[in-house]
Amino acid sequence: MRAVGPAVEVIVFRTAVLFCLCLVALAVGVVSLAEPASSARPTHGVPSAVSAPPGVYLKLDIESAITGFLPVDHPPHPERKPPSVPQLHRKFRSLLQRVLGNAAVSGIAVGEHWDHIQMSNSSYPYEPVGGYDWSYLDDVFSVADHLHKPVQLLITPGANSPQALLDELPSCNSLFAPRRYARPKRCGSVVFPRLQESIHADSDVLPLPWNKRYNGAWHGFLRLLNRRYRANREFAAIAVAGPVYASPEMILPTSENTHHKQVDGMWGTLISNAFPKRPGYRDTDAVFVDAWDMTINFYEKLFSGVTLLLTPDSGSDLPDFSHQVEAKRGNDLYTRDCAASIAEADPSNSLYKDLMGCEAKTEILAYFVRVPGPNGKATRDGGMRAGSPATLQPGGIEVAGDIGVPGTKLLTELEPPPPILIGAGADFDFPVSTKTRQKEGCRTYPKRKCVPLTVTEAAANVLKVFFDHTSHGKAFGGTNGDGQVDFLGVPYLDVLYAERHPCAQLQDTLDAASQALTGQTVDCSR
Image 1 (cartoon, rainbow, N blue to C red):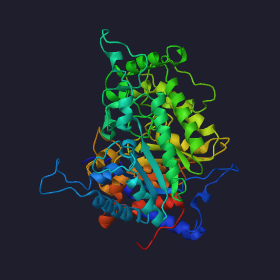
Image 2: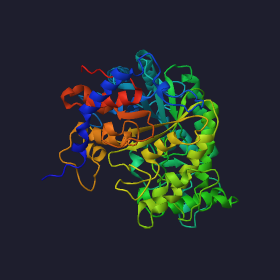
Image 3: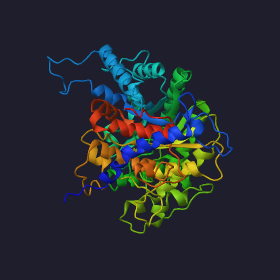
Image 4: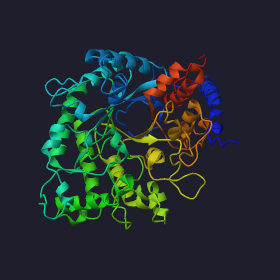
């Protein structure tokens, strides 16, 4: 008998989910289309700032979408000319209208690299005016305005910083060269061994998270972005970024994620060189915590009336200098979010090596929760898969991990509630409609593939992780609980697939997720 993994167990819930949710809507009169869905969330008497509307958000990276319109062969064959820039914009707007027009889609989470907006020279398919090409983001807002769909912005600095800025930052690489080379007293960038996230990076050069020139340039760019879009009614949320590598997620090169043992030591050398009079920074992740706290403060002061999205992901991806870790004062999340790492006694286990990074990330989260400001707040997991840890508590039959999707739900259950309620969301890490289906949708991958595994089964497996331990957990094959989820990021390729293959029933799955998040009835006659 062929092993099918958990997929078949979950998919049988799809039809039941739609039927039950429709009955519930008719019986209790769920929120109407005219009523803000966010009002359905209990506030426990605590005031809440403006929050991004809940629902299924189309996840689209502008760079990936544009690449899909270009010839497959590179450089293109002389007889197959690439589309002109105006043609690309028409294709891009047409794509946006199609996928954003899907009834299950509440809004769009759009990503773009900083260096593809702020540019020194024209480089196809970008045409900067006055040093900036806002045209593709303008396309997004234009279509979103027309369809009344909110926009989440995921703009990435780090290794995607403008080349002109990277050229200005003195390299620290000589710190790791033979002693005959001069040791730079002040340097601002470094080249690390590549990690998986490098596929999203436009450069090998990483600005140091604490570098003043880098942070000043990034903050200046954000001021321009805010000035351009702050009055737009569909500007709903923005991801907090700055001390990052190649995405808004809290990910930096480490010995663990690059498989190069010297990387954590490189960070130690960089920190000692930059802060010789700050012993509190040595052999700790404190400098990264301070960089994130500064960044959060800047976003709170700059933006107003939007939701700030913080993306901690798992407890890993920050340097590990020691296993002797103590939670800092005011960090009440450490023992809950990092329980799996605290309990892990095997030094060869990745959870054991995550302890310092997990504590640092929970410090940042604790600060994010309590810092005041005029914005809504939410945390998101940018890499959710069917095999993602389902719980924070080790010892049960479910795989435990640090922070991740369970950690986003934890922040929605805090007692006493924080001054501003914390929203929660997660994104599919990969599409389920492409060759990445097993990686995204099989709970036992890569140890064992789920065979067979349909697109809809893969999506259902991921939704089980997303809705588990919420009020809709059982409906999606999991367990009910008190956790809250507000928004789900689905790759645009999966939305296209759902529309092109109605018999695959992926659209029904998206409808069910949308209704569970928004409280709005689905079209039961579909």
